[in-house]
Image 1: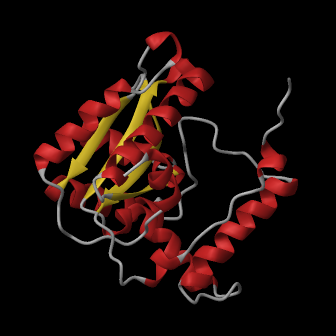
Image 2 (image 1 turned 90 degrees about the vertical axis):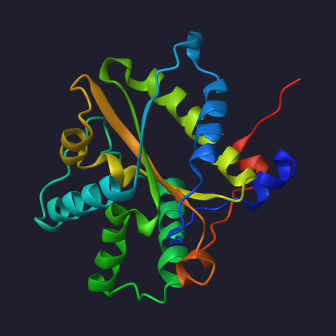
Length: 220
């Protein structure tokens, strides 16, 4: 499958089968992702991949934290309030997601339950947390984004789906305690991944893309 086909076919998946990915395949994917480019080749990513019993333990700890209605305490700036066209696209994404699940706009209970599934990793058999040394700031975040996209495409090439989740960086403390992540490393975001549950309504959600003329200008 070509890279163009992978990009056209990939979408965020929010319901997974319980079947785990073969350990050799996991090793291969993350080994290949090491080829991702980074500024000055600093390779800032420190990735924690959690599966099995430890993943379930972490899920329970995160859900317990969220259910206490504590204020999110991310280690990086997640306080961006979208404006203009960016806000319109945010609403469009939410409408596509909740519409696929048949959840009405004013049904706050069901929306909150759907949101809570972020910290259950959407029942995926695996979750990755992307961390970097906090001092690296925006330059490190750029590199981590490139690395995460590389991983997503390598997974897609093997028929494995994923969902990037900023929510997995909102409550870092339970994750850092369980995985013994050093204090100088901050959790930027996470990614749930596994084999898609193709029968789940939520996986019918699709978002659109803007016209090229709205995003790119060519000069010669």
